[in-house]
Length: 263
Image (tube, rainbow, N blue to C red; front, side, top):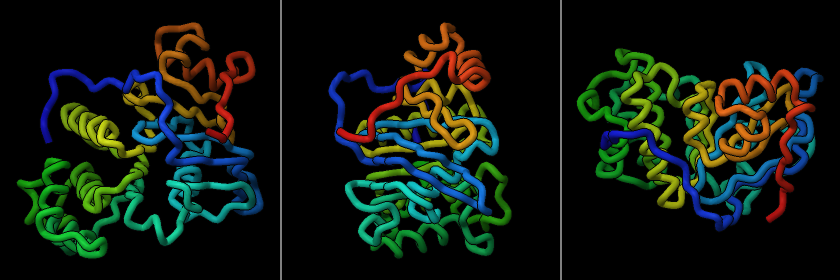
């Protein structure tokens, strides 16, 4: 991974790319209770969409719905024109869960080569994925012996190895030091510039500012869907932390228009 002297900035083009992810009227119940209630959003090809909200607001459930591993009550979720979770998407969607998904009794390299083989990739692709997440020096270490942040990066390497067209990341920078967070975000921006669509959840406000669009979710519903600059303007503050607080505490007073789930 290459370091950057400044934080990466979102794309500024006016042209709207086609949709890579479309969610229409999504409803999810768990334990007989609504978790998501009529969620709609679009993530365009080659963009970074940030998903933010308080704990328990439905972020992980929405991410699981996009990946296709969440049972939904009603609505539609399509990824690259296919129903979420379709067999055709297995080599096109990369998914990083909150909990590291590597095998503790295998080394970093063995884990990544295992996932590479599942996707028809080889040693070269595995080595490149490990280098992307700055774990080359730890490639021969057992995952169980790594720090929490290193385990997350090992899981990210497994998600990157098939060169997915869509990358879904659930809190990918938790436990990472500031320098590595910056390098990871530079890599995310590079991936988006190459046409990869990224949906990423986070609770870190300065990371939200690096997204092309932000989805703010509260109590199972989207209360804001816009660019960081537009959200600041809607909440009448230049401080993104304060903007989120105002939107969460008084969503009706500062509600931003959400996009129709059509292109």
